[in-house]
Length: 160
Image 1 (cartoon, rainbow, N blue to C red):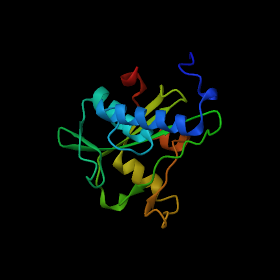
Image 2: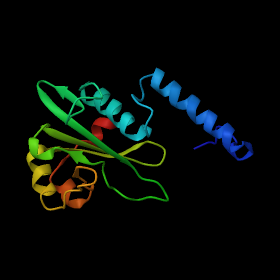
Image 3: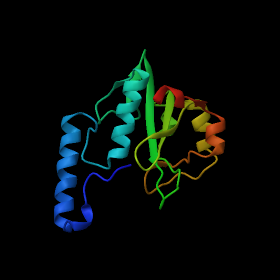
Image 4: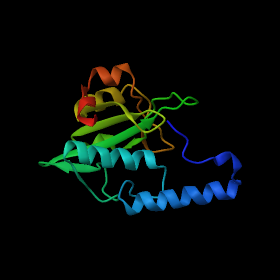
């Protein structure tokens, strides 16, 4: 991947200003929906675009998108050279069955989709019950590991 700018010559403040400008522009283009880490917002946008989902408001409890009455929770992870963890964001209120499907998107460092999966709620709930609920975050923290993946449908081709 070609280097677009020589950040090594910029001050810390200049780099943060570029980051702020980039985030603002991505939000204007609806690539992201919040000012948080862009990984989850970008995953939601991609899932919406590639799977024909309608995104819900950010305040919707328990799911991110809908299609034909089905509710979709979208979780993602960006794998980098320094962090190979496949831990997904916390899933809150899982006991309440607020979604029908979990969409999992794994990005590489450059935000290219490495893998994408769709798991039914029942499979996610069965796996979640085998891990301890994170009381501090108020939900379950799952990993996109072989166990979860083996209970999911590979939908990576939809993102190519």
